[in-house]
Length: 538
Image 1: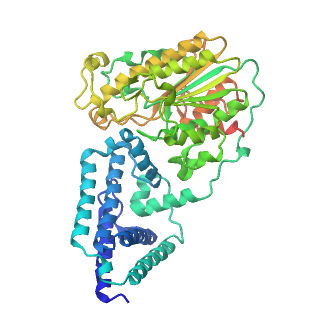
Image 2: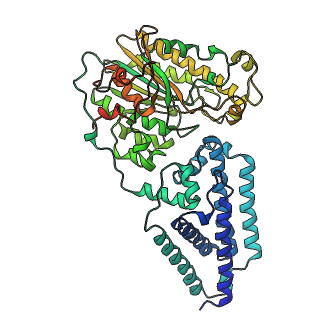
Image 3: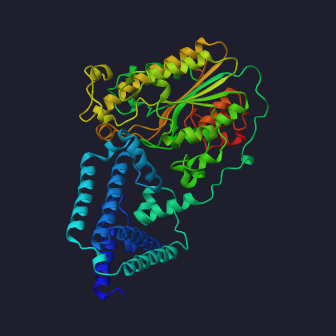
């Protein structure tokens, strides 16, 4: 039997650890409510999860205080990561982010710099101190009790944790999939658990009955179509009046002759490209995705959601994605065939290309797309391009000699080095716009170009020194031969952009015409996926 001294030795670290775990949460941004102000079920789930993790640590190391320190060290690490994420992306850590720990090991440049050296050292030092102290000063319980008694005690802790978890989850706590609000209401551990529960539910893919076929088959030769999802692209001239207008000279010229252009409400801030990407391809807005809005490629997209690519393929298009990075990133190599793409061209096809900064540049990417267009046969081609050049972290790059003089008409405020680097890469994106326009112009037949930004870049210091953007990016829809100043200005949501594009191309019926939705001044905002939901079919 387990004696009273051993039970006391176990009860103290358990109670202390649970109390400290609630205290650690108060160091988060945003700060969760105090535990006594949360729903009772949220408190119970927190305690249950902590007990279960503690039980695992205790079974492995057989030292209660050391097990407690390890659990708290893991929680502290998540708190530090969450704060870093909130600082850069305005969103705290969520359950779906656990996947990115593995990605951070495979692609450290994309993640670790945002955590920061101080936070990383602090977390490692805390874990190292706990490891040393636990193994040096605390004796193992195995020396004080028989092995079967020890295992029985661990099993009792597990049963207690599972029982508490069952009690806490009997009536599911409400989450609204606004991570900041859910964290405040429920706390870290409970909000993570609830998001995991929601993701484990059966996926309800929107029914094909919600979509419509085109009213009639398109007449004549189908035009080539290039869509560019430009990394972190937006008109940064809105931030600071001293930025040279010529930074986006080609974009301005193409926009002037665009069929349609405006600002774009996207599904992400600073990162999480796949949220914008999936919304564009599927026409599904965040409100219809539930928990899958945070990373639709984890589960939802694998169910074979109808997309723009599958629709165009059904019309006879060859569908190609070009992305000068690893196809396995975000598991695009597995997901994109399910979304209707015939081919995925990744970084393996850019082996002999010199990088622009840390990534394959936009000019080299444009050359690859132009080559695809030149080689296209009589079959129309849809090329979906996902660029990389302007991907952060920008603060790891350096301002070059003539950048400031070339990119600004007056000196920028202090703290704008990231903005200067961003503008340098933005100029390359501008060159890409011109190259694609010229290539489509040179080809026989009709051609269309759609260009949009996936999210605004991460530049907290520059925003503090200039202005904080509202998160909207910019887009345009251009057609070969379109006369200047004949297009319309239309601000849309990303989930509506694909439908608007195909409507302008005449590939779908104009049930909800843009003119009917437009306001008197020629601008409008369109409802959640209203156009695309009317035409995509399996």
